[in-house]
Amino acid sequence: MSKPRIVAAAAAVMSLVPTAAVAAAPGPKLERTYQQAYEKADRQGADPGRNIAEDGVQIADRDRDARSGELRRSIGVLRRMVAAPATSGAPVASPVLEAIAACESGGDPTAVDASGTYRGKYQFDLGTWQAVGGSGDPAAAPEAEQDARAAALYAQSGSAPWPNCG
Image (cartoon, rainbow, N blue to C red):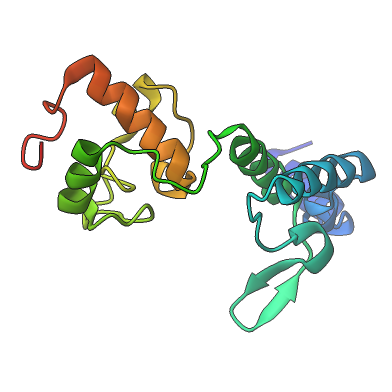
């Protein structure tokens, strides 16, 4: 069979398979795992936000069913929320770290600099965040986790990681 015929045959077969629906549809085990992680985060007061398994993902002005990859990523976030250090109502950060955070981001745990390099309350870059045990996006991590990671970094290196605000 010639190459053009092979390509045409493959295209014909692929047109018969609803690939987007097959690839995107999460299985019951994945949905159950997501629900368990969501409920645990909710029970522990972590404010998990929208339940995408039940309510779907909001895109512009409509909702659609969550895809497998979205559920998997959300499971990781939910698990990190539960594993993050709990707050006792009082700030976890020392006065020195609070001053650094105020200078770096105005104290905003979701802050991202214009270049996208520095993220979160203490404006971590991803390499530094990972070096102190963080995973994922620092700006998406709970504030208490950012405080704990900054305290670990400060214990290791003092104010040197924050040359403009330390």
